[in-house]
Length: 418
Image (cartoon, rainbow, N blue to C red; front, side, top):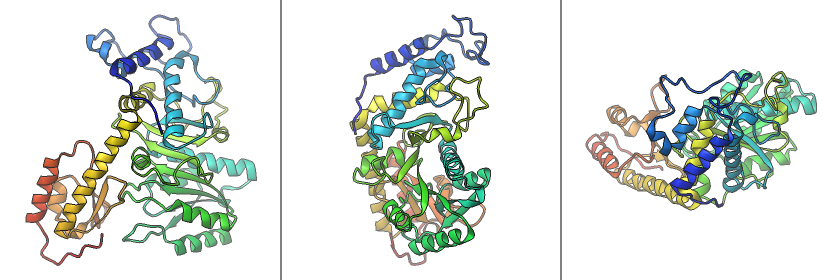
């Protein structure tokens, strides 16, 4: 896992060079594209600060990255910034997730929700086209702790959902429930399975035991394709636990979702979808013939500035700098857990992730409200409150939280089962 750290001048030069490779709306007679530069009365291009603001310069230039540029035949008007997106996809697939050189496709999506939908869409069509499956014969396996985008996917794509229960303390998938519900699905006539594994669930930061799940599926000779929802964990877990099965070296995995607008601190709208070569074809929208290469994405048109932002952040840190930053967040989370232990407050936490899910019974609602802790439910009484130790969380904020916890402790006996 290695990519270089670049100076701010080198980053700026690369981005400006990419913009210069794009065709400029102001300088070239572009008559066939339903787009233009941003409204110049509001977003004026001669603002002096833009000389040292490559991301904002890209926003003003307004490149459209419609399509998937790791495939051939993409829009030549924006080839410069599309090349940066391709570099970004290659870096994430090969350096972070151990893929072979030039053996993965992908694009910068609107977020993890879209990227998860893209994966389910691809595999549904794969089973339909390769096995002549009906939608009633396709099911999606995912845990009850999975992101709501999985439920949204099965609803949009009209396929079956198979939700697996988890242990309420360890948050691990229950093997007996996986076996029981898979058997029930097979008996119901479901022959083809799309499996979602979580590399950090949204609420708990829990990581599914992918090896146990795939061992079961392979032993039973079940036809499946496996997607990893690493929207939260993708930019932290590989840097805090380099000995894990969540890489493209694991032949059971076909695709990943990662979100740059979480740990990477890029603008919202910077989810990333990665998949092995040969699968994007199953969602090729042949009706989009006016788009060079047609379209293979859920969203269609999207801002090239988002891809540039992610590229910039990764190269500003380099692989070693990013590993140090992620480890420091995990260390800070561990320190907070130790202090919670001292107060006897119960919680769940994966040691390689910066999320702490605290038992709601152990924290007053007023403290949760003061610190904007996230509840597991706003429709019912919360059972958990979530703390996420992000870069803006200072030691002073943590000290303040701990002081409030000490003074607001519940009177009933608290047993630490973390």
